[in-house]
Image 1 (tube, rainbow, N blue to C red):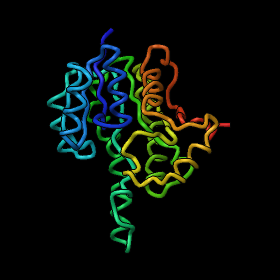
Image 2: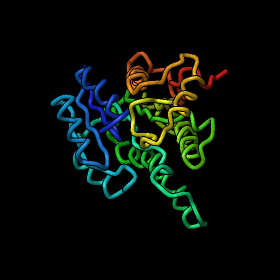
Image 3: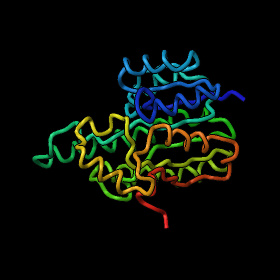
Length: 241
């Protein structure tokens, strides 16, 4: 059965891999992001069933425009928008810049998921899925970014309880180090990369496709009794027991 899927942050990295996985399954996919160029390129390269919509998912005005673009029903929503905005800012030098840095990460990672879910809440079909990309940083710590991802996981608990009676599940996929993304903005040193890989049990970097496979499973009919959970995709760098 063909589904209608919304993937935020779908132009690059994990979001692109997620969009590709659903498109390969024959689903109709809407991808959003702030940069029109990468979005349109991804849509043209993946499938005629992938539609690009420029949108800052933390901006209520943009989300209202998105509502006018999306179809009446959505089967799956995947929140991939986000990332560590500290890489885009100077180190805080006073209270104002410290506050701005924290708000940037909370907006990008937490509010984008909260507001987008609220914007499409009434379009979710029975048996639908909401899947949010978290991070190992929620457990390991990483300043405002780690705190934002920890908040995402806590928010998801309430979301799962709210949507559960409707047959809709809500889960987190929490990656460790994933190569071939823009996350580190090309500032990751070889030594740091080797250390991150060495910390895994699999002794390899994760890939966007690893994360997309977990998302695809959570979106499947077979995952209907899995909700309110955090599924780690980190090669064993941090275990649950």
